Image (cartoon, rainbow, N blue to C red; front, side, top):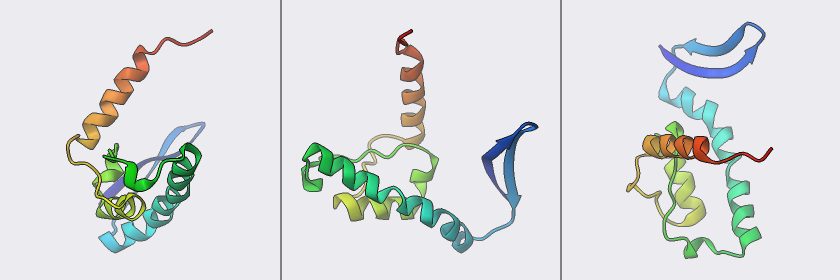
Length: 106
């Protein structure tokens, strides 16, 4: 049994998917989501005038970055594997910590 938490929410609270599925089913579920990240990455490169080969490290953050398909997509865009120097989970927690320390404007 796998749980995909916090898929949506309604007035009664968060909704999760609890179901049995195999790796190919998971790949088919997340494939379109991963593919939707390609154009924003390419646009960010274009908007900044930076070429993918000029990027020294790609740091992936968050749980889905553990998936091989995510690493393959990063490699297809940037021409290199994501950096293994930072734990993706630790990076998420560090960013969350920074967010709580940033003063908000009124």
